[in-house]
Length: 440
Ligand SMILES: Cc1ncc(COP(=O)(O)O)c(C=O)c1O
Image 1 (cartoon, helix red, strand yellow):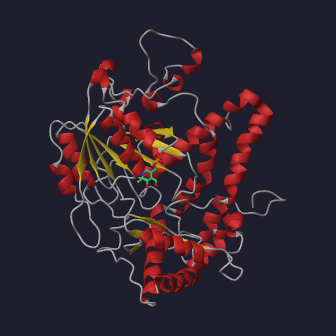
Image 2 (cartoon, rainbow, N blue to C red):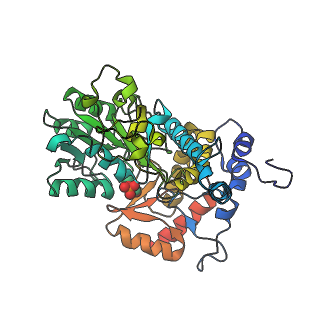
Image 3 (cartoon, rainbow, N blue to C red):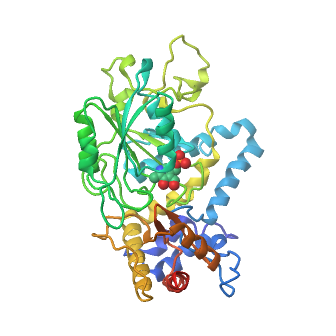
């Protein structure tokens, strides 16, 4: 236990208590639930006889650990106590940012912590990349799927409208019951004019895993284009790896973006851009500085020797991934994300993935027993962390479910049901009852 007075388990103790085997509802309830006393103590829902709503929107906003509040308090305590001294020292704000970069690098299989550039949104990461490939008025050509999330979609359309990028959109194939994206269609859109290719590893609206990401990266590289992967719905859901070629691999993508809002319980603003080390100065010693990829989205934390206050006429960048930093960074986001990252990494992504797929299977069965068919993926791991009800009026169905006590959301003609470690089979049965009633 953490202290004599405090009998709450630490994350490390809880993970240890979980043991090494596959997760079960019993083991998770016993070992992990004590980390979530505040989240589990929600008010009862007016329609559910004294119990809280069934929260199945974990694929949207993840539920925080008790430790999250304590970590944020730690950041504030330093401020009150040390004022500007809070930035420095082994436990200071900068050290927490370094921890964030280390944990994130581990989560997404980046080779070095400094490959992770903290951002406050995934879109900010995309803009930093767009603003790195438009030097001297070059208007980059970007290939992107129509399945990119609204933020990236809107940014690309805005760049296009302002003459700052030309975008080639890749449409989904006409498949039933919703369009699926195929690597071959993305590859077909790549030619010698293309500068950047953007694909989500898991499509946000349907959860489809985009198969063939390493092949897309290779096709981009064959045409001297760069590859950026949106991992918002894969990081924290399944083992992923920027350099990998197998499942979860991105084939050595140049960039990845994502955020901790969802599966890793880190709340809004704890996002990041990963830059492949091949683009960092110290792995390119022979490269002339003017050929080095660098972005307009910069600031004094990207400067060489930030705190020397030395000014040169030509900007001199810091070494490694720090060259991609910007101005004075937010620090709360690093504290906010820590507990969820530690828990996810402590349990391990293999086990998290297996348990989530098991939960999705239980959900499907519970619904099927009430005559409601959830979408069944062709292979169990070809979709991400949530199950789908395909419905013409998905938004209205999701709204009604919320009124009745089941919290879901709807995107692109699908209601999304995302379980997490706090979800139970009993909740799946209750949700299935309510869905069957709402669908009539
Ligand atoms: C695939 C994907 N990318 C990005 C985001 C968020 O983008 P941003 O951080 O720019 O708001 C989301 C949020 O739902 C998402 O699903």
